[in-house]
Length: 334
Image (tube, rainbow, N blue to C red):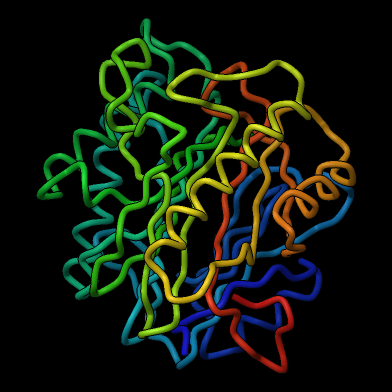
């Protein structure tokens, strides 16, 4: 049995999930609602493409315990912990120390609660490509994250969580993360230079994340947490056209799946995807091509967002599973 599942649901119908004692997290997108005093709820200020309003719901296999530790909201069961943290930027050039602080708090909370291994982290903050004090904000974020991860992790380059860093529409640094009691396996993409080995032209400190993390939840149950993946070969961005970038991105996703499948008894299948688009693209042709290329039709969420490089127009992240869980109540569950 998987310890949790993730589903996309119509946002207007998501509120009833708050009454479920198994709820790990309820993440809404778009205009942030009035904050709810519930450590399981969060809001990411990104508009959804296609005119729909979707919520991301994380549901535990068992009742969860909730709380706030070191300022980090969390909900967990005996196996996994979902964490959320938001910090306001106290100065225009404060993103680097703020990021380091946020990550140190994530680690402190996760370890104190008994889940010392971060599997996946989502990072959202505004003006990701703007310069401040002579340094692009994404690169300042990377420097702060690197500072914290080097301090917190042993064997730094082999224990990095999967991650994405996305430009959001509202102030504040927003993070949410998944942690476990037992570590996953870091997966790298043979088509790409590992992000933690990027040359210095991409900033004073390298982006510190793995391309994916493979986690076994039993002998034959696996999750693959796929980091934000874009049209990059080696360490260089490729193509100017959105559909050409999509093709390269899909090749990278296929390469990651192939690497992970070498370690699993059954093939992993994409089960949930989040697609970030810099321009206001029509999701329909993107969805059609993704389904065709991956030979799968998982639930997809298309969001208008800025991406870590100015020239990149599309980024895809998500989860793959093997084998697919059977749940009579959730036909698109992870």
